[in-house]
Length: 297
Length: 285
Image (cartoon, rainbow over all chains, first blue to last red; front, side, top):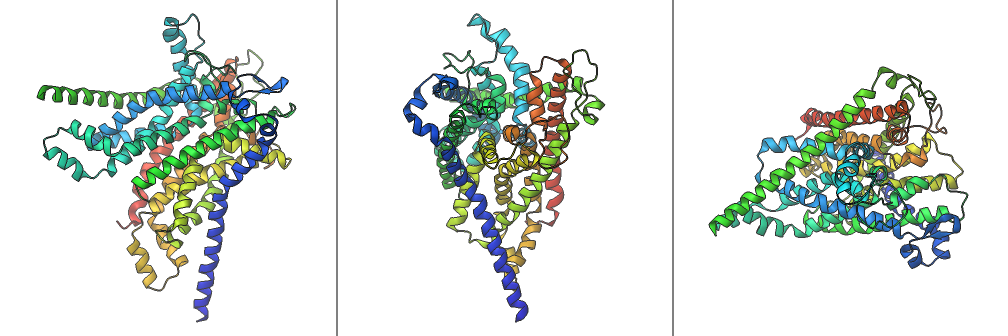
């Protein structure tokens, strides 16, 4: 009897400890949100939220904090990345699930793993070695007089490749959830493989595809180092994709740590982090909930 | 009509092949570029020497990357251990202590997925602001804490992915012998061993490659930290800070660091595959 009650006590204690660890690690997200809000509160109280978000004048020395150039920079780079990556990822995923034989798959999965595993500085180095010179010597001269190559386009290309593995692996997971019966019944009615993909597989997984794209957007939104290395970082609203831009994460990375002397500068940078946090939190929540519905956990 | 269907299929099939080739080309191009430029800058002294004040022009040997290699090892080693210590109990809690249909488990998984999506720059900025609040300077300890927070969601979700596929029968059999939930844990541990292995490698990969998180919190230095309160250099930051240098010897260090990082990632990726095969022997399918 005594032995048993000791075992039960151990079980209960473990329960308590594990519950505490779980709750503590979950609370990180709350603490982070509240912390960022408290830190950026001075600037939110000082200025109008709309002024902060839609003014394009960034002069911290004069106390002017307009985030528009950075927001536009982030949107532009993310937009280019999604436009480039989405078709490639979708077609690759369809090919790997519907057409490719097992040998191709056996080779492709490790390759996607490597792409997903490479650190963002590596993408940055690759971007400065290949993409930036290509834009400045080959592509840009056809459209503009001069470009250093450090442009929004370079950021978009690098970022597009970075989100490829995420997109492809989530798409593959999605297409796997489509029951084979659906494919079989479509084909038994005489549809070709491509017609089945177009009318059955893609249509059935449309909500999942949208959720995945939202997830990829949020990933691209927060990517820092690689984009920072190839984007040029000029705090002006970019007018074309062949101009330098300055995304939000790059703003934080470049200035945080050395700005503590200027008033409100720290609050401004924390506000940038807060924008990132809120947008990414919402995007992630929405897309994950949709994906959980499709593939119940 | 028949012909159109045929050509449409052919057209898209070609596009698909093309996309797949594009993906493969990207991977090959990145690894090839990094290895080729890195190899030219690589030397034995890169791995074994601290950087000398190589900003003087004309110095043939400006030392190596030992500071960044050791710094990265410290941070990755410590945060992987800490991360494992926190994540394992959480995974067991969600999968064994909680009911399969538990609402709490659902919310927990959702939050870990969201935490996984939060970019490391936000972790870094948040961590640094707390360090400033506590009056701490950028240090090894700060880097370890931020990287630990960063990899916990990856640890948990990738182990959880495996743990969720645990056959309930095994647990039920153990329960029916009179085991408590805690005593079921070792049984489950054997089953998810390959999952723990791959999750660890995944987390190491993420931890060693992260630059934005350690940028403010761990700082950068030319020497090897001797205590937790000293700043520490890391490989990604040594790429980032030295790449734009006009001095070739310094730039070489950046390329060499990039090569080291890439090789580590390749090894981790290969290791992951081998590990999965090796550890699966205790697994009941």
